[in-house]
Length: 76
Image (tube, rainbow, N blue to C red; front, side, top):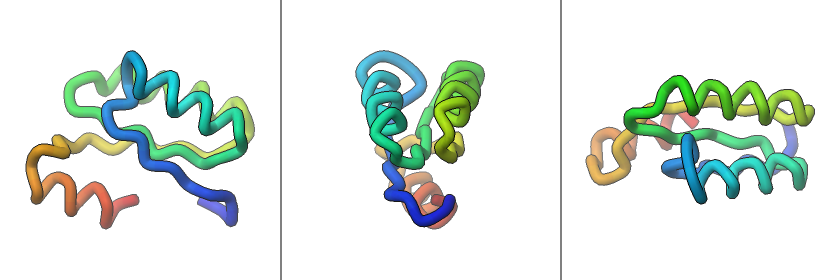
């Protein structure tokens, strides 16, 4: 994702997480969008973030599940 700082925002497909992801993108951070159920909304957010000129990636993971969490961090 380049030499910019990268933020991983959990639960970022909707609500406060979404707002946080957008705020970080506006500050120039690449953003990894974590979601569990809202794939469509997560992908919309990734597109919106990329339009700001930074990289973004959506990763499905339930952070309450240690295997999902580990896999998400490795993928990020």
